[in-house]
Each structure stands twice: as structure tokens, then as C-alpha cells.
Image 1 (cartoon, rainbow, N blue to C red):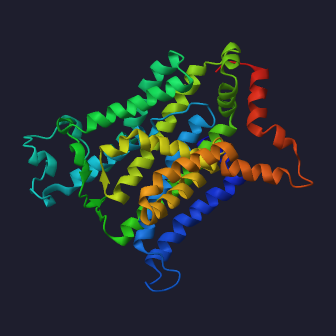
Image 2 (image 1 turned 30 degrees about the vertical axis):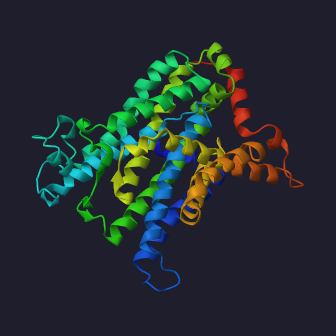
Image 3 (image 1 turned 45 degrees about the horizontal axis):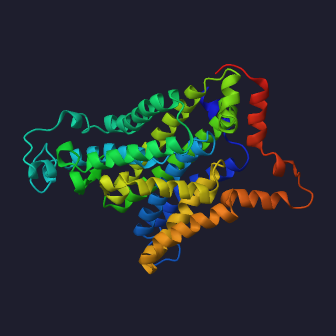
Length: 390
């Protein structure tokens, strides 16, 4: 049943993008580990780590696109779910340090010893096991999203008001995690990681493995999201986005639809954060900054929301530009980012993928129906006509 559900998503351009991601997940580690340094096809370690980080950002943008592009929920708090997943993985990595820390305590992390903590807090129990940390990567962001969505969607909070509340949520978490008495490292966060699953993080093979894990996670997430939006539930999502009042009048439990997709999206963001932390070597409260969540919105808009492929392209392209700008012209990066968002809003309202699709639709001999009535609009109209229970 699960296999047939996933195969539903392997249609159209999704097949090619998923295949490309799978090939990249194998090819890049091979070129990094097998091809000797100095050879033209060798990929340096820093490129592997840098693009591994980009893939995590792409997964985060894909998670946002699922709720914004297909359900109309503009979340300005997805950076919080990303950070919570990162902290869950960071806690596991800290427990793996053991007596190799600066203070040599086999149980307490260095920052707790420095702050004169006498025993490990109860909420750190279990994080010495990878399986437990993996569960928390999913459960903690998912539970927060479920509780938040339960109250917000039942109260029918929508539009800009919902966006502001999500941003307030991530800012509240930022302030909380900055406190030393929270037990998460305060301003410095969690860092100085040594290994993961027994493999040294500084080893090139481990970094290549993390890159491959990020690529395959993004590939599976793309197929999973495609399967959702191509299912009957996906049509209800589109109907909720395009005509929420009408969908509710026809008998669909719109708040349940929103709650489900919001929770799933938060769990995807948590996975992205968990893959991100061992590759960058640190997680601190700065990841909760509202500006980070706004950047994710920009990545999605640049690539093209409501396309699945667009957010991946946007996240990678914008972050590659950020890496170049912050090295060459660091003082102008924020101005460039703002100008990019304004330019996309004015000249590319459908993003890169949408603009390319419109360009292809104007090629003589192609069916022009997709120009006026895209598959998303046709699906939502069909659901609105049929009605039913959800």
C-alpha cells in the first residue's frame, strides 16, 4: 500500500528530478572519495559540506511549499521546526562526546559542567541512543505543529494573522533557547561534536555519507509530497487553498486538512534540521531567528511555490548566490536579497519554474490549455464540484 502510494508521485518531471537527486547522492561522494586530489573531477571536502547544507535548505523549502503552495498557509515559523529537529540531533551528538569533552565529564556536556549543573536534566534522557533522537526529530516539531495548528485552525485564523502568529511562535522560542537555565547551551548552543553512529564527523567519508543521506532524504521527500498532492487528499488541499469557504460548505473538515498537512510539513522541516546540524557542526538559538523563516519563504517564491520542484531550485540558487555575495560583497547581501524578492514579485510572480512553464506553453503546437487552467486549478474545481466528506 505504501509502495503504491509513493509510486503515484513518480509522474512527470518529478521522475527526472528524483532521479537526478539520486544520481547526485551517489556521484558526488564517489568523486570526493575515489578520485584523487588534483584530478579534474575531484570534488573537495568543503564543496561536499557546502552543498550538503544546500540540500537541507532545499528540504526545508519543500516542506514550506507543501503548506504554502498547496494549502495556502503562509508560515513564517518553519525555521522553528527546522531548529527543533537540529537541537534533537545536536543533543544526541553532545551525548556521544562523553569524557572526550573539555571537562572530561562522561555524562554532562561541557556547558552544563561550566554552569555548575549537578545532574543531567530529565529531558536529556534517551538522547544517548540514535533511535530515540531520530524519533524526537519527528515528534518534537510535529507535536508543536499539531498543538499550534489545533488551536489556530479551529479558531479559523487565516491569512496575515496566521503568518504573524507563526512568526511570534518562533521568536518566543528564540528568547527561550537563549536562556542558560533552559539546558540547551544558551547563546552558544550545542557544538564541538565528535562523531555520529561511531563515525568521526571530521572524516571525509562521514561527510560524504551525510551528503548522500541529505540527497536521498530530499529525493524521498519530493516523491512523498508529489504522492500527497496527486492523491484525492491533494485535491482537497487545493480546494482548501482556492475556495476554503466553499470547501467547508460542501462538507470537508478544512481544519483537519490543514492540521494534517501542517504537522507533516513540520516533521519534514525537523528532518532537514537534523541532517543540517552534523554537517555544519553547530546549532544555536540563532536558527530560530524570524529572518531565517522569511528567507525560506523567499527561496520558495523565487523557485515557484506550488510546484514542488521550484522550492528546491530556489533554495539552492539563492544560497549559492548568498555564498558568493557574502564573500565578495558582504555588506550588500541583505540589499541583494530584498531586491531579489521585489523583482520576483513584480516580474516572476510564478517563480522560476512557473516562468519556464509559461514560456514552454507559448511554444507553437503545444496545448495551451495548461496556460489558462493549470492542473492545480482544475483539480480544485473538480473537488469543489463533487463535494464529499473528509
